[in-house]
Image (tube, rainbow over all chains, first blue to last red; front, top):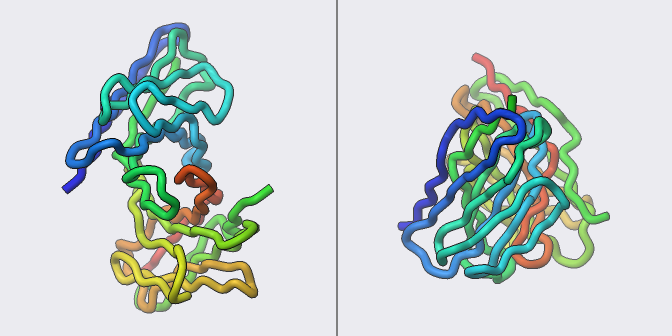
Length: 114
Length: 112
């Protein structure tokens, strides 16, 4: 069966420091991978998605970047964090690009920028 | 703009009573619609989806949803609520490229 792992679960970082959140998927190949952010406990916003190694699409302009160095690894990064980057970050995957494929989420990473 | 709407921020229901969490959509063509549940400090869990076919979709944990094209709705239902169903529920629609756009969420509170 497929599983998704996301870490760290909790992170407190000072303003201006770098960020790296990692996500890996097991039990599948060539998945679509996603990074979502949830602010204020409600709204979910798609930040990045990837259909393959090195193929990243950004949905909104921001202080963050994403990379996919391996088929089942997705990394969310920032060179210098802002207070507004605080939130709950969720990695997700789906089986390919066909319409109607279910998207499965990881357990999330809480980021607090202080 | 195409979207889904969840008109209720919170729904309260007594345990054992039926529950409904509402979702309406404004999407052209044939919408692909999803329901997810989120427990506190956890990721989202998939409940069910409507792609095509039978308008009544059955999902996990006894939940079901009815796709109603004339009312552009996709309400989530359960015949008998449990306290453990208390969580945040999200409706979502799939745009191109297998990407989901979510509603604002509805907090369900089931009381004894």
